Image (cartoon, rainbow, N blue to C red; front, side, top):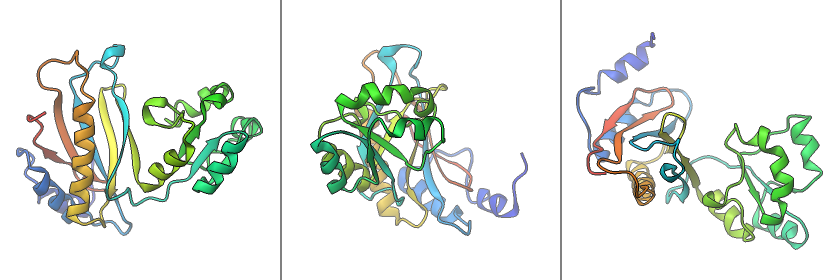
Length: 229
C-alpha cells in the first residue's frame, strides 16, 4: 500500500522494531498528526481471547476522564415518565414504537449511541438487523439498557466509550483527539487499559494482551509495551 509524503515522513520518526512506553507513544503520535483536521487517536489491542467461546467474550464500557473530543448524539427508547427524564438529561432524540419505520424504512441513523429502558427492548429488538451490525444495539454490559437513563446519558456525554472484541479478537477504541494534551491522552489510555485489564476472562491463561498499538486517523501506528498485561 502506497502512502503520501506526510505519512512517510511521520513513519521515519518511529522505530518499528521498538515497543514504546505509553508516555513515549503518546508523544510520538502527536508529532505524527499532520492532517488538516483534528485526527482521532485510536488504540488497537490484540488479545489472546477466543471470542467464539462465550466465556472469553469481552464487552464493557468506561468513562474516559478527558472525554472523547467528539459531540455524541444519543437516542433513547423510553416511555412514560422516562421520556421526560431522558429529555431533561440532554438526550438528542427520544421516542418509541414510532421510530421503528423511520430507522428500518427510511434509513435514519443520525445518532451515535442508543439507550433503552428494559421495558422497551422488545421494541428495540425489532431493529436488531439494522443496529446490530453497526454496533448500536443497546446492551446491559455497556450500561445502555437501564432504567437510570439520566446516568446513562450523562456518562455518554461525559466521554463514555464501549469496548468489545471484534471477529479477529481485537479491541478498537478511540481515546481522544490529536489536539488533546499528552496528559489527557495518557489519562484516557490508563482508564481504558485498567478497565480492559479488569475485564480479563478467568478462562484466559498466560499473557492476556498480545499487542497494543496507538495511531491517529492518518498516521502510522506506534507499538506499546504489552507484556505487563
